[in-house]
Amino acid sequence: MLWSDPKNQAPKFMRDMQAKLRRAGVLLALAMVVAMFVVSAR
Image (cartoon, rainbow, N blue to C red; front, side, top):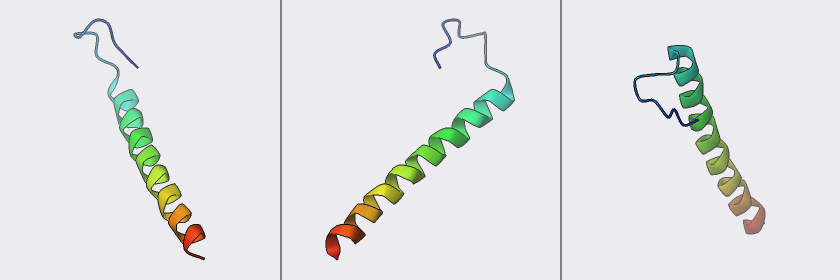
């Protein structure tokens, strides 16, 4: 989410949730890449 006004910070729980989602997305992408390698190696 983009906040047009810098001093209008999102609530802390929202920022924590965004960080968790971003981390989960990265982990999911890495898992997909690893799964692709495993499948292609067979």
